[in-house]
Amino acid sequence: MWQAIYDDYQNKDFIVIAIAMDNDIEAARPWIEEAAPTYPVMIDRYHQLADLYNMVNVPQAVWINEDGRIVRPTENAGAFEGFRALNFETMTVPEEVSATVQSSKATYVAAIRDWAEKGEDSVHVFSPNDALAHMDKPDDNIAKAHVLFRLGLYLRQISKNEEADALLKQASELHPHSWSIWRQAADTLDNGLAAGPAFWQRVNELGESHYYKPVDMEGMPTEGPPKG
Image 1: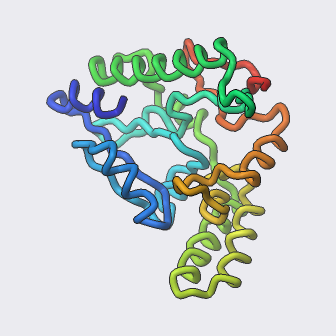
Image 2: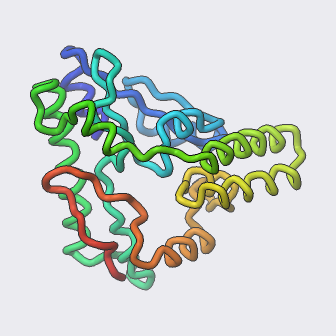
């Protein structure tokens, strides 16, 4: 998806920059190498980008114009939480949920293409005031959570795992909406994803709350989470 967009618009002053938020470079490397992107890809081990732009999950995106102005603040990059309707016996989701997943992605991609082609004239570009209104502003707890998170990751690197785990847990408690912080301290599957029993328990505890905050964009779903 991102490679196709980059291929089509790289000669029109448009660039895609992908950031993997993973404290383990080797865990991120296979995914990047398999995708083999030609646009810039970086690994943010200490989640500095999440701190700067108040990112809480993946995939999320920020649209920044050529003047450095944020025209769409941090938002879900077209994903839909269809996985919450997963039938664990058949490992499938209902057709209507699958259709919403595909529609969400297509809608978001089309919006990015519209922006790449029309720039400030795109209907998807927010005015400065609207962009500010759509921005989730971090509070003191979130700021402290990022500091503790980075300190916890450092302690892990020097093998002080008990102290590290305590700080990572505290960071997640201070910033409970951040799946990115929680994920770095969670157990992972063989493929490197934090999608084991603890993940599903945390997802189920969301109840009617969203895993992905809905995107304010025409054509994107706004209804509650899908039911399994």
